[in-house]
Image 1 (cartoon, rainbow, N blue to C red):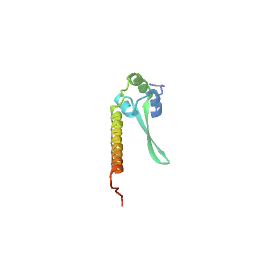
Image 2: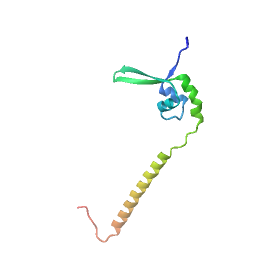
Image 3: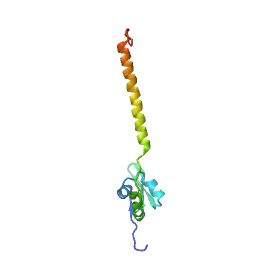
Image 4: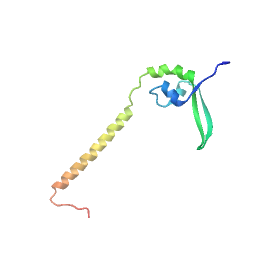
Length: 110
């Protein structure tokens, strides 16, 4: 490696090479991508910037972009349950309003 400079990529740069990948760091660790953490001081205190080895990122990129991601069933189920609860609330409100409008005696809140 004499005379050869290793380039390191930040998370936004890795995201351009790995479109559609959610958590960059977990994916990099799972595929054996070398990384380093640089700590620097700023006005708001110390912060850490993680950089990933460019050659490793490029080596893994074809495997990640070639694999089609299946849609998450969890988000679909959560949306369905939310709509089901909303429908139950609206139905109970309509039934309560209908019952109140057809009762012979009016009930007041006071």
